Image (tube, rainbow, N blue to C red; front, side):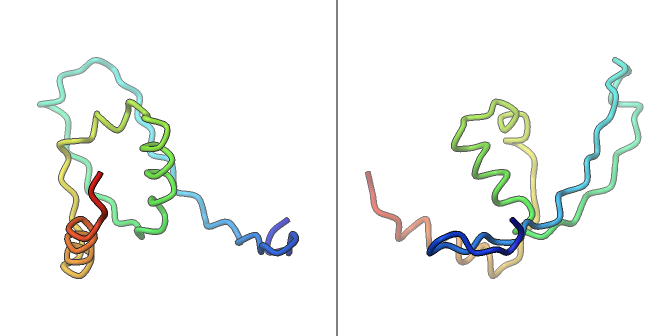
Length: 89
């Protein structure tokens, strides 16, 4: 099914999945834990995941609402322009 045509639509080849980084919670105090380094990922790797999570109102998104992320100045400008130009409800 990869890359094959289906009617008027072309099925896009699936992107490489993100690496899983699961940790076992042992109940130890987080203050003694060593901070893990940040991850660098391409925006395209996470947009689909985030869009699906927002659309389905996944509760795990709330766990990360206060996390800071770093984005390029160009992307920030595009997001600001999009926010200001979107139709009001």
